Image (cartoon, rainbow, N blue to C red; front, side, top):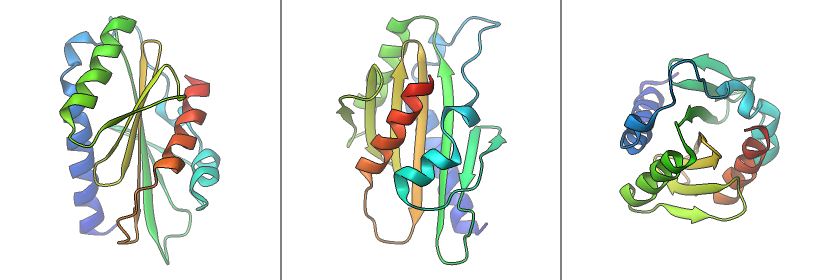
Length: 163
């Protein structure tokens, strides 16, 4: 993995984690756990949404990381994390915090109970189903600068079906 890719990942994780940090006080009670991020979406789900061959996810300290199976011509990665709030109201408040704290964030209809999309060093979609929030982020490192909103919405629908 290149230094530039590592730095981008650090920036994205820091940015997306900071956006949700506003809701940390509303974390779930002890003993409760959110869904395993590596089971929320699969490499097949990401491959289907983006038309690129992703390898199975690898658990990491921040959730689950997916990379292209063949990175010889193009580099891309996906990141999935999940969190569980104490109440639905607390989860809704966290989603509102994300939507209002990121300049280009917008609400997406038809994905889970609530979804918010933004472009932060790649496409990011927060999907809420009940008290669970899944963070999905995909970055295609092709220097095109093209946002792939429809693709991440397709992925978000797959995630919402498993939450």
